Length: 424
Image 1: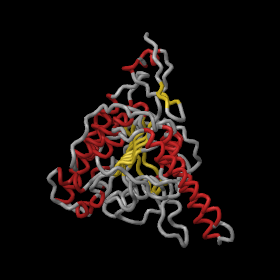
Image 2: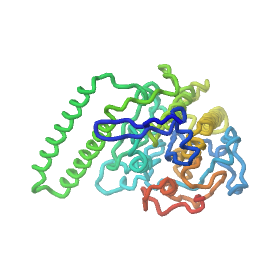
Image 3: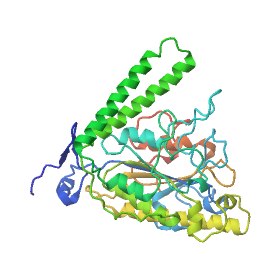
Image 4: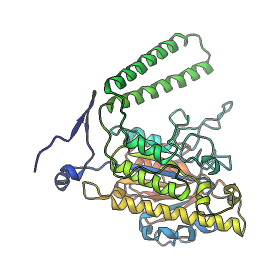
């Protein structure tokens, strides 16, 4: 075999390339020297589901369950998906906020005297563990249709360790360029810009030190939060410096068209998610999906909010059509994850944990959040239907997944423990 050095040198680190068969890693894989990394995907949607036709029959659990009407497009993957019922976020109290609390549990939301703020989201807990060796610790994907999709406050589905919203990429074109377009600014200029940012950060830190004497407890708390924001910026600058001179990997897909919406947008975003994982650009992704434009792309004339307040007739039919289409799209994503082979001989699906759902069940109901799990990375039982006790913290599911991904966490949000029936 022709020997090669499979490394990229940056100004501050030696970074290994992802395991690519095309440049000689296949032989390494056959010798069992390649270990594929673990990844996490969180796909969230607003307005909930059709309660009567999305959830499987609660009387049929374990492996002896049947797909509901809304999940039937996933039939070819039934042995690889698990549906969990009975979970909710106890601090969620806004009926139209489909993703604001979904990944957080919002255990800080109810503190007396506090204005609204969230707690850290599960994806960011995962990113702190899984994202150290990738260009992007995590990527947040959005849709231009957030306002009509029942998501609630936030800049994406991700919230940092201070419970502050994290910005997301607004469309497939923006996501593609973030992942695969190289910065044409000369390296020396980019180095100078980073050095300037470091200098400004040092000055800000010094100013903060000067004012901390004689502060009240409230002011000290605010200053601590300020220091945390400085630390967050330092981490991002360190990541930028690490990858400054490393060119981005050639995209395995073509650049998306401008103006994609609805079903087509979701399909392309799913393609980008696979491409991001395949190239090891990141190992943690969230996608705050559209609902309003999805209905429009299906020629459904019912307004998304009205659809969520369905009764028998056009509104319920629209809700059911939405469910079926979302399941079709999810099935297509799972197809792609299974078809994408890794250097160790397994598929991308085998090394990925995917969670799909919403903070809303249907209409204004916030109990029994729709929750579907798949992928082989988190050491969970697949092909199961679990019905947990009513109002089990949804954060218990996230804690179980995080532990299964190798994250050493004792709790998350308002969790009360792991979901033992979910562990393989």
